[in-house]
Image 1 (spheres, rainbow over the protein chains, first blue to last red):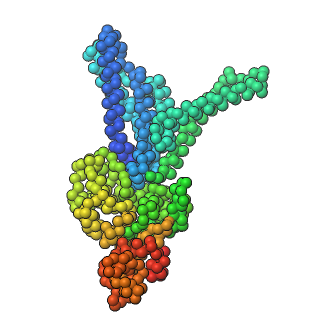
Image 2: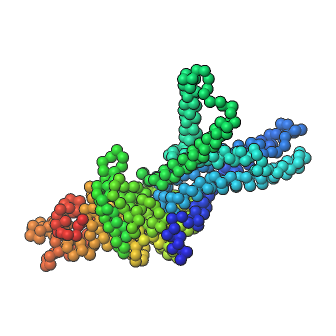
Image 3: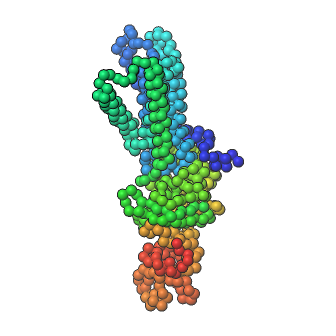
Length: 254
Length: 284
């Protein structure tokens, strides 16, 4: 019965979980390498600090680590569908008995919320170990990383926001997904800035005596804030669903 | 089981490969899909497995469009491509990782076939030769419990004993409620393993008939030049002292050699009308 239920459902939590485990398994080499590189760089930086400025090598803190979480996350996200773009590998993923919904959203869950939780836990443990070792060498106090600090939460918020854009890029671009998405973001930003600048110039031309709206009004500022958040939310959804449509329609052309 | 209705397909910027192609695949059969190089055999298998989408028309497995790639549909079909790139994981890990998705995967059957193929599942897949990789994937395909197996050139890369082993494995597989479509241009390799012949030519299925029926209608064998005229040879290839020929199975004096799929394939390609006329209502 259980098996027939699994067969008939268009969405199954079990298959969703299996897909997450599948992605972890497929990318496990990359995860391990990334982790070792990060730990290695941190150790080297610390050793340099001990060697060059032995009197005040500085205290271990969460600074910089959130940046690594951010960049590493977007790099992993950009690479998550690498096999779908490879003709001789994509057949296996695309024909695996899980629906496109399960395949796509499990990849999203892994590279977004699950990655964030994992990275925060890892940072907590890693920084605890580092600062404990540091205490032995320098006598500094042990550092407890707190992901719920306002600054860290802002990082997480912006990561999860930008994640949808890079997740879309992972399926949209056939090659160099991270760089292509970055380039696309630059082009879009320039276009957006040019449009805004053009709009301001035009309004100045049409209303030479000044702006027709009072930008300092609190009501307007509140409205603009709501509009800004709405814009981000809609963009977030737009890229996620555009990416899903792309994934659903991916074909093995070679 | 699988039905294709008025399917048209062509790669962008190229001429249409299939136009209004229709085909029905019934359970319990091993189909041989034959065609010349570039006839579109691989493309047709990809369309059947939902890895390519048709321009128009529909391809359904058990009433559901394969294009939707529903989990239940994918659970019921397995496509083994001719060209593939496997990841650097142990064969055993591959089975553990991927078999979980197939609700009907039979581990005992996989072990049996892997044993017949003499496969070492502790090896990294990338360390296996192409032939061993292929045998591994064939074992996986035959054990996954899918009711439709699409095998693209499965004997390519296999050595002679492995080809024979493959035929034995195929013959010993349970076909109840299941169909296998084997695409190949090596007709001779698989002629004894199939019970239904499909010939794809110029974007159409030009022959779709069971081996039993073909055997009833046609005789295969060597005949002399004079016999070629008197017996009404349908198709012949010149050999020393006469022809290797296909004639109608009409009693006394007909050549009695075994069914020759390769010769019939050549006949269908060279002169489909003659074969159609001989088969009358059977062909598509």
